[in-house]
Image 1 (cartoon, rainbow, N blue to C red):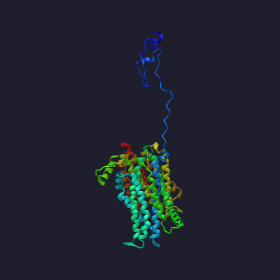
Image 2 (tube, rainbow, N blue to C red; image 1 turned 120 degrees about the vertical axis):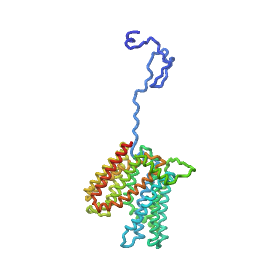
Image 3 (cartoon, helix red, strand yellow; image 1 turned 90 degrees about the vertical axis):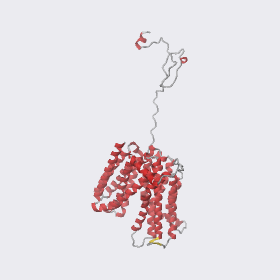
Image 4 (tube, one colour; image 1 turned 30 degrees about the vertical axis):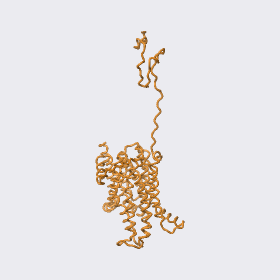
Amino acid sequence: MDDWEIRNGLDLSTPVDYTDYNSSSTGNSYSSSDTVGKKPCAPTQPNSDPPDPEPEEERGFLPVLRNGNFLALWSGQVFSQLADKVYLVLMIAVISTEFQQANQSISGWVSAVMIAFTIPAVLFGAGAGVYVDRWPKKLVLVLTNLLRGGLVLILPILLWLSEGMKFTKFPLGFCLLLLITFLVSTLTQFFAPAEQATIPLIVERKHLLSANSLYTTTMMASVIVGFAVGEPLLALADTLLEGLGSQLPVGKELIVGSGYAIAGLLLLLMKTGEQQNISSQEQPHILEDLRDGMRYLRDHHGVRNALLQLVILFSIFAALAVLAVRVAELIPNLKSSQFGFLLAAGGLGMAIGAAILGHIGHKFSHFRIALLGSIGMAICLVGLAFFSQQLAPALGLIAMLGVFGAMVGIPMQTTIQAETPEEMRGKVFGLQNNAINIALSLPLALAGITETLFGLSSVFLALAILSVVAGNLTWYISKNER
């Protein structure tokens, strides 16, 4: 060994055996035959160039809209929800032309229709979700739309056959109208949980927030557009039908029924990929399935807390719908009948909030977003307590209330969809719809009375306290239980 070998601890005079050498970094093997007559060399090094960075996952609405199955569901939602809103306008039009007497208020007739529309939500909302879990969801979505369209289309025939007839003290035609409304609303109780349960089947989990944002944006837009264009759209339908030479005044029913029918046909294009479990065993009783849903909510705190947040959110907006009439009455140059402008501002704000969440909401925790939304709603409600008599501030605050409301509703709906297994979604969404419909009834009944007793500002402040307490409580519980 020379001095260099001694200093470096090497003995190059000794032959090197590479027979058993394997490179762990490259996976290559070297044998003694490879080294005969060659200088020893280090194993081949991997490519020193850094690997290409993985492309960032695309977020926002574009990946969702490129999903053909979601596009079919969303298109069906557009036509179905517009038909829902215009249907109520149609009922008012039929009452005013067929049943309302001169110098008679239409309120009593309309209230009866609204009751007929609400009863199925309370009675059948939870039970419908159980059957949605048992039946193919695509079949439920298609049939409920086609059947609703058919019911609307036979309404003119029923009114013609019952003309001049009475059922007790009421016109038979109006009783049949209430029956049609009851059946349409009953079918809607099956459609709603089936639609919500289908979204996680056709959308990847990472895109659920964007899908729900688009779903909520469409829902709020249908409220604004449906009630705004309902009357002129129905009038245009009758005019076009008359222009074609028809003497039958069925244009209104034709346009609404066609909306439901088109929704059903569009939903036929969707593929959900459901695994249908065909079993000869007898299905459990519906009450047992409902108990399963209740137990699931009891044991899964994240889903339960999200549901609680949604119930409180809808309760606040139901109270706002009543209080908006009083706000419109107090604002100079605005009539109480124009309260729809105020609600439209809230709908527009919710649509904006949904659009923003669809692009950036994935970067944050769902419950953290909901907490910020609850605090923002409380601030807006406090502002309304002091500025409800000024048009510009009231419109701005209600619009911002909608933005913050979207920050509560969309993440919570996404949490329920993502954390609920497929076989439980119908039950959970049925219970959710039932709880929300019941929660809506209490504020609708009490908000007006409370405002009369304690004043508008006091009610807004109470709603602000409810919002911030509920938001902080559900966030705290969720944080400690994770």
